[in-house]
Image 1 (cartoon, rainbow, N blue to C red):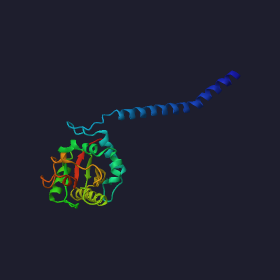
Image 2 (cartoon, one colour):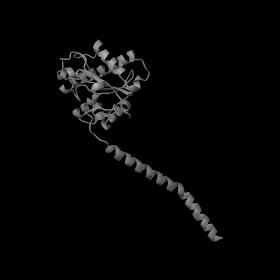
Image 3 (cartoon, rainbow, N blue to C red):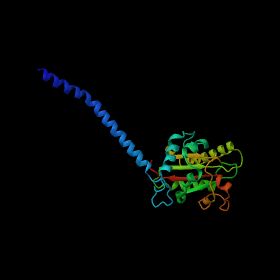
Image 4 (spheres, one colour):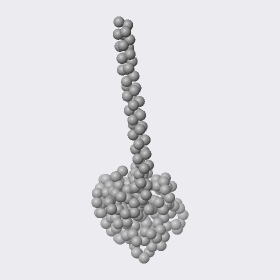
Length: 233
């Protein structure tokens, strides 16, 4: 009789311990899977694609990180779209100026650079036509990215607000020309002022609005880069 009671007690104790054992096992397995996933992410090629044989070839881990942070972490600005100011831009990019600009080189064939007049955030007819043309070439992409800059004339604060105005001018035009409630989830705005990732002469042969001969650094950086990006986040 006593042995039967002892057996029942042992079985009961084992049953009581079973949930704890299972939880420990599941937790250990989950941690192992997470560790494997993180190692796999770290093992992804970090080079920037220089050719785009497929639409997603340029979707490097760095570019996806920037997109994800701009679209999810930079705060919804008034009127739709998401944007980061220059102080935040360095944290969003977590890379130096040249590497940041290199991320966008493979988008040359489907993007454009809007060139503004000095100290102006107003779009002219040529700017609007370029926005319309680039926006119409969606080809299944999910995110329309706007990266605005300012040339070094003036104070950092003025240029920060000027580049913000240039980015928001693009969004305002899109809202007027392509009214769609989904725009605020599709359009990401990043304004850099003069403080980060200034463009150099290698961007002179891009599709640009304005005078094609005007390609001094100050011309290039009174600008907003626009393009659809078809990365899967």
